[in-house]
Structure formats: structure tokens, C-alpha cells
Amino acid sequence: MSVLGAIFAGGEARRFGSDKASAEILGVKLLDRVAARLRAQSDAVIVVGREWPGLCCAPDIPRPGMGPLGALAGALAFAREAGFDRVLTSGCDLPDLPLDLIEQLAPGPAVAEGQPLLGLWPSDMGGLLKDYLESGGDLAMRSWIAQAGVRRVMLSASPSNINTPEELAAFLADDRMGD
Image 1 (cartoon, rainbow, N blue to C red):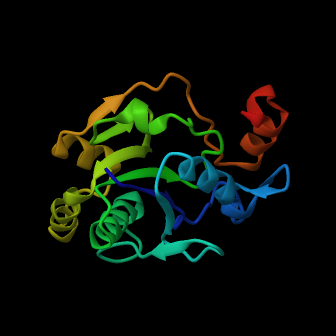
Image 2: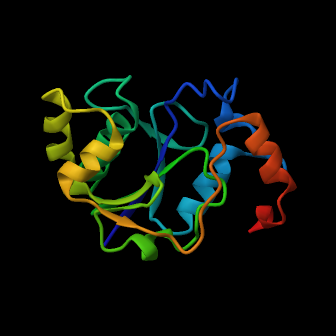
């Protein structure tokens, strides 16, 4: 089965105070670090919600401003059109996402407990999600997860989530950083 890695990067990063996707860890931009970790477990990687050098991009669907669910709908539509069976998703702010994430979440649909942007989705769920969004469904990821019957999986290790400059500084000081 073919897997598309998709990075959600359309948020405003208000808590971070600047473009967190471009923040650097050992000279590597945060989004590029996430892309490398997704690339290790997928056939291709895209970014959703913005342009990024070196990666194909997909728009949020049905329109920008719908948060992670719009990004997920965009990723699922891209995957289906490109012939991918599944989509492995992450936010751009999870620099140490597990390199065995796909195995932990399989078979899907499934999300990581406490990190619902880390997910494994069959690409054929895109139409259902698009209909949900167009009908005015709740834009909270947890609402969609509950309605769609998505499994929640406790990962073997909790990945870091970088939302503030302080969290980035703590990550840089952590011994796990190179993992």
C-alpha cells in the first residue's frame, strides 16, 4: 500500500511569535526535520496549507482557515488524486515524531492520543470529511475523530510539540534531541 506523508503547516503560530516552521534545530528547519522523519516511513511527502521549498504543496479543503481538518481534507484529496492509499499526517511542530509512527498507528484510521495531528488515514475518507466540513460540522479535530470512529493510540513515546520559543529551547537542551 502506498503512503503519502503530509505536514500541516497553515497555522498562524501565534504562541510562537514567528514562523515556527522555519525555526532551526541544529541548522535544520523544523518543517524540514518533520519532512525527513515522515519521508523515512512514506513514499512521498507534501506540505498542506502553505508553500515550502522542495516539497509539493496542497491547499486546505474546502477553503483556508478551517484549521487541521481543512488540512486533513486537503491531504486526503491530494492523496486520492495521486493514487496513494493512506496518508500519514503530522503538524510541522513535532520534531521527534516516531520513526515507527506508521506501524504504531496501523491499520488506520487512527490518531496518537494527545497528538491528534499525528494520524494514519485511508485516502478514501476524504469525501466523507469534505462533506462534514461543507455541512458546517464542528471544526475541532476531536469532534471529527469521534464522529468518524477513529481509533486513538497511545504511542510508545510522547513526541515533543513545539508551540512556544520556550518549548523550542527546552527541546534543544534535551538529550533526546538527536533521536
